[in-house]
Length: 462
Image (tube, rainbow, N blue to C red):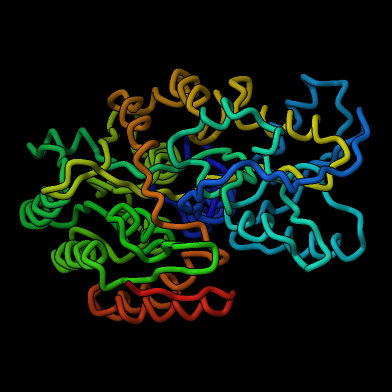
């Protein structure tokens, strides 16, 4: 999934269809290509088999970055003038692009041309951590093999490096995360006399109350290509759960899936949750975002949905911690975005390449002013301390963001294919036709299963 370039303040409240569509696309670019997913981490020692290419101290490194990350690379170049760099701009694997993979396959055949450092999506790691052919070397270098100190790796938010980890090794550094929180319009909540829910059952009850007392106001939307990551991922639904690198569990009949489908079906029927997407063209029509009372969504919603798209005035929007289910003591949440940096195993200057990737993901010099929430914990604290990232909100978001960053469920795995395809191609059209999520779960299951098999996964359902 998906990444953004923020719209500038001052846009009129009624965003035009074209402007709203551009905002949605740019938001996808900033969040790091595809919707990032996570994978359970096998335990193993760093790769003893990794054999670096012959090293040439001080040699030029080639860096591939998307347009959103380009200023960061340029900032590093300016502050490290002795490092020789060739900077190339590419699509960053946004919107499911396979450009990087195709190029690496070509370079593997010709034996040259690999970039030293690349920005991409977590989906890239699934192929970059494996050889593209029997004679090739996996593109991504295992960073835990004496390249990045373990202390640095331990500094990332809990579970945030899971998309980087295969067969016990860490093949990338996480640039940012997009942990899901409960956004709400505090001004409206206070006006209506509502309490912010802490459980999904309270959320459901409040949604039904809103539908009766303030018809037209919304507590959520399920019509975007990433809505499943906000809701079903947060419910710990085993839709994309890797049991091992070759076996994917897809069980949408699991109670953690059906409970969320049932809840959303009730709120959709009550018209408290819309089947339109927040980023859909239709939603841009009046009244648009002014009727959004609550939204379960990623940490970037505050600035790039409520502020830039909906133009809700400053001092109204707040964030609450991820919801729990009654009877469960610990909340889990989803993740909608977040890119990664990989270092090439073919680099002849691993020192410079690793230093760059580490600086880009951990340095306060860049991350404190980054567009989205850093995955590296110390950098995230600096990001939260930057007034530019907090002054828009009605309350302090720091504790909520930090808490949610450690609650992203790692059972929604990073796979060789996007989790958005089946949702967009099967579930969203069914909702448009008036079908319920509950009755659509079997078709969603089939679509995921078919796509997984097409890229070589064995399927487990229980």
